[in-house]
Each structure stands twice: as C-alpha cells, then as structure tokens.
Length: 332
Image (cartoon, rainbow, N blue to C red; front, side, top):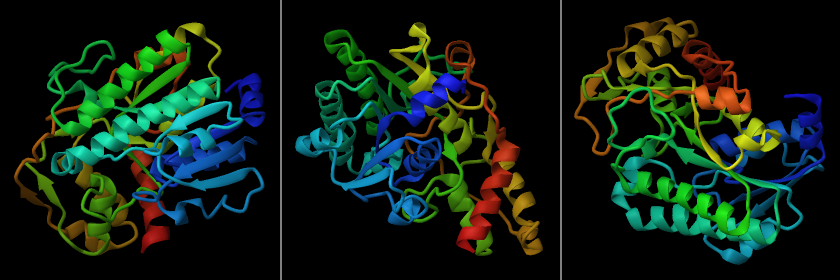
C-alpha cells in the first residue's frame, strides 16, 4: 500500500461482520495494527472468542455480539462507520445442502440487511466476501470474473445473489461496493473442528493425531488454495484503492495456481513430519466424491493485478509451511 492508503486506513472507522471468524479475525488484527478503529459484529455461531484475544482489550477495538438477520443490529453496527467488510456468512456447500433455509436467511437476508444499513449510514465503501462457488458448472479454466455457470448448491446461489444485490445497490443508491470471490482460503485461526471444517485444517489435525485423512474421490480434484495473507492484502486494496475503474467490481481472490488433493496431502505430510517424523508414514484413504463439489478450480487474477495492483505474496508451499507451523504451535 502507498502512504496515502495507509493513512486512509489509520484514520478510518471500520466494521467487520463475522469478525470473530477465520478471515474476519485476521482482518480485524491487521486493521488494528494499521491504526484503524475496528468494530466487530459476530453472533459466534461459527466464530470464536479466542480469535479476538490479541485485540479484545485494544482501545481501538469494539465488539458487538449480534446477528445480521436483525436489521436493528445491523443499523447500530454501521453507525459512524467509514468502511464495511462483510465477512459474516454461513459457509460450506454440504451445510447449505443439509439446511438451505438457514443458509438463505443468513447469506441473503442478512446480506441485504447489511447493505441497507450501510446505505443509510452513508459508508464510503462496502467490501464483501463473494465466493468461487459462483462459477458453478462452468468448466472453463482459469476462471474469469465475467464468465460464470449455473450454481451447483444453495450456498453458491446465495453468494451469487449477493453480487446481484451489491450491483443493484450501487446503481440504485450509489453505494460503492467491491466483491471478493474467495478461492479456498486457508491459514492461521481456521477452525479444524466441526462437521464442516475446511479440508486443510481438518487434514492437519488428523495427521497430528496420527489418523488417516479421507480424500473425497480419487484425489485428482484440484483447487486454487489461497493463503490468508493474500486475502488480507486484497481486502486492504479493495478498501483503499483510488482507481475509479476498480470500484463496483468483483474480483477473484486467489493465487492463480492449483493443487490437487493428493499433492496437498503430500505437502502437508512433508511439513508436519518436520515436527513429528511418524506422520510421514500415515496412509491417506479415499472415499466417495462429495455432492455439489466442482472437479477443478483455478482463478485468473489478472483483473485484480491490473485494477487493484494485487501481488500475492504466498504460493501454496509457503502458505502451507506457515499454516502448519501455526497449527503445531497453537493446537498440539
């Protein structure tokens, strides 16, 4: 970031919804470190208080425990706010297939509540977590922002509807928005527990416990695994960009490279075995493919590079090495 961008951050009041979650808490910490005044809104349905321990007593940090499904809570949270980072959502394709109604209530109705509150509070910009699931059944690789397919899950539908609502709010109410289509984000503070845990922290914990991870399918499915630091960089650039062409757009938030699940487990075993040599010998098992999963995901990041000056700092190896080290230090 330029000096003027850093100054903009340090002089701003910022709201992070879902701020106790994996991405939200990392974002809160970074914003606090840069001098911003940060309000976190979270109902702790998937977020954790422990994620806020490093900043909870900081004078520039405020926590609102509440739900984005309540319009009054959203209105209160947006008071005197310059920028909104909307990270709150019910993630997971399987969760949405099991309970589409709740996913819809949180991800669509909650999103709309936040847009209305942000509009009424006259915030400068609304940056929101979009999703690579929006590409649906499109088989084209790499994924380019302007070309999507049909959604393959209720979750994917909700995230696409978010993009449509954001576009309408800009056109109808002049609320500036930027959507970030996250591609398989991983890193510190990502929860390894629960039925809907992401694959990387789940596999890490299983290896650490000397259990055999189960890959869905033959392991050839591939993903553009994106380290948390790259995601934080994109959010900050979306907040501070002074390029008028960059605003009211949606961007792939990724590395622009892909790794299949067999390769992923090999890299994890390599780094984890540096802490525990027995992990190198743990067998990886295979199960059936998971409903709603797309075979391959790879992002084009050219648009983000061109309009936001995005330059990812962590490829898969570097990111996994840092993530594994964090998990070993914090969860062992």
